[in-house]
Length: 60
Image 1 (cartoon, helix red, strand yellow):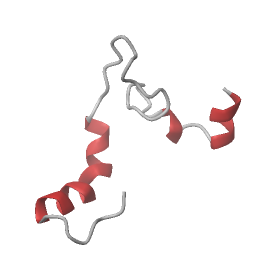
Image 2 (cartoon, rainbow, N blue to C red):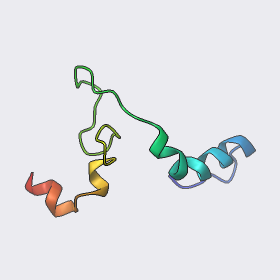
Image 3 (cartoon, helix red, strand yellow):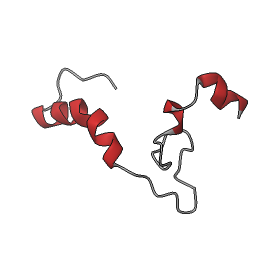
Image 4 (spheres, rainbow, N blue to C red):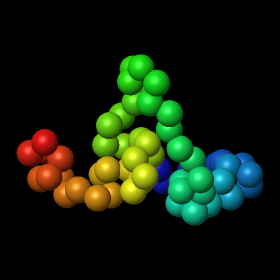
């Protein structure tokens, strides 16, 4: 997400910290209805899109 020019100071700081904070946020799969298999941080190695190439995801 690009940083909007009219966002608040708090939102600007949160958006800048999202990469550092991402490792602390885990996704609980539950029944799987709200889970994005490749995008959500449910796997111990992190989001799968970071581990696989676009071609690897397409092949799966």
